[in-house]
Image (tube, rainbow, N blue to C red):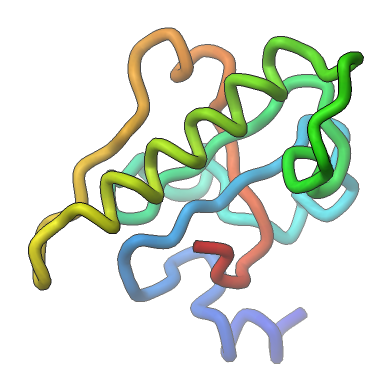
Length: 114
């Protein structure tokens, strides 16, 4: 774990425009950037998808997907769109709204996903 933390920045990663996503029942979230460890940031936003397992939001949509999973996919798409529309060197706004804040609140692995 120490080697991984050294390579990735551990609980204080450097960089911007990285979205950390965790499933509520993801066994890897113990090695994640979590809101309890790191203050929220619009440059390094975090979210937790209630009821979701590891990377469940990256799977093809299914009719049985939960509302939380559907909102997570929309939020991820919106956030990446915000970043792609910014001017080079922009500060990186957040695509999340208050409704999502109570549904999506944690993080993902320490690796860059966006």
